[in-house]
Length: 169
Ligand code: SF4
Image 1 (spheres, protein in one colour):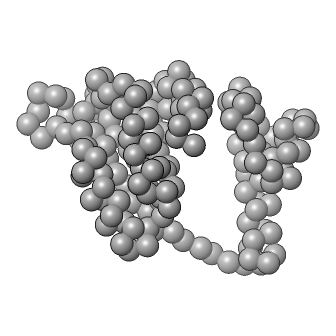
Image 2 (cartoon, helix red, strand yellow):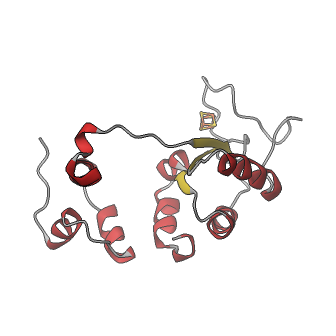
């Protein structure tokens, strides 16, 4: 079992308090195993205490949709049948109109979350992602955004920028 820092930030998290953007950045520096153990402990607490203390007996689900924002990728994994280059006729970058259509369809069936996944498009800069997130936040505030995992894993500078950018919170 991984031991967790017994500091003020840990206590704050385990007390269920909201942390600040600056504190989130501190967590970014933690060893991954410790951060994972803390997240798991907090998750168990939250689950146990939900539904008037019956959380451990109840299984829930949400309606979630995967959205691929681009299939252009410059990583070229050998196993991948998804990626295209900009020379391929069927390459794409999602437009806001296409995104809205998907989010409207999701909302119509009670969906509350999206998983954003896509290739590592060499021409999409940080601002493109921020504009996309800002658009979703403003027009679909009921949709939780889960995504960019591959992108964040690929670049620690991008993941730090996401953390530091207040406009998508
Ligand atoms: S990073 Fe993802 S999209 Fe790109 S080639 Fe690899 S598996 Fe395919």
